[in-house]
Image (cartoon, rainbow, N blue to C red; front, side):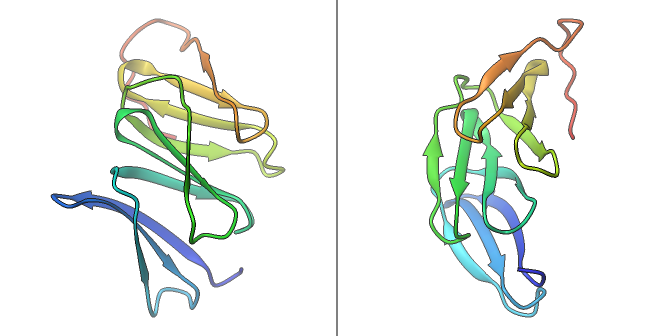
Amino acid sequence: MENHLWAVGGGAIGGTILQSADGGEHWNIQMVGDVPMSVWTNDGQSMWAVGQCGLIFKSTDGENWNKQVSGTLEDLYSIQGASDRRLLWVVGADGRILKSADGEHWIKQANGNGSRSGCRL
């Protein structure tokens, strides 16, 4: 998985996850319908994408993406995980922070000051 890359984007026709198995020479387009804003993987075996309206997708092969329940309808901007993939964090609109200890279930976290942080990981 060393040469595998993923990228996300969106437009008028919906969201796209791009995947390359050759270091970016060629890209496979995967439409997901919703608009992802960030993708994260540590090892290429498990990966997550987050985006508009509380979107969280998970994939175990980089080709098939399954929606997860985030518990929010706010846009999610970025996802980042610990190197052991046991803890994942998502940040989004209005200071929304989500945490997962298993990559499946998401818990809302306090952002510390109740402000609209607009932060990205």
